[in-house]
Image (cartoon, rainbow, N blue to C red; front, side, top):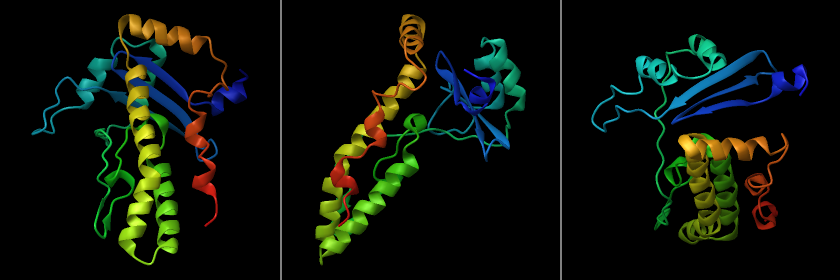
Length: 201
């Protein structure tokens, strides 16, 4: 890979229950870095977990490149990550959910906002086809549930793969090493909606 191509690449450094992702933004003017790790101190009734000290502790055994990057990561933002299993209950009468309210998902397929936009398009088209909003909402949910659920569970699965330990990590690394840099065949369906999803109303 050329130095120019490397500077534009998304780099993911994966380790046991943690990863660091790095990529340029704003036409290369800024470089984004995000450190993610599974906290050992999470409790639902406390916010005293996922701290800077825990980040340092978790990444202490990482390679030098990752350790050198940690001081450059801002500590003023902390985003706890949550998702849930897919649900069929998107609609109740004349109330409909979309986006994260309908299908909260982890970031591993970079699809949170994308799926909200797909929801909005499908909902808008359904509202154009039906005079009763309740019918439009039911049609919208029927069109979107399966795809959103597949992406939602796929994102969780990718996170689990990224954070594997031991033999699982060894197998993951061997699989990734055998792939070309442009090989996305196993997830290309995410960015290639079915024709029905893009056909004009």
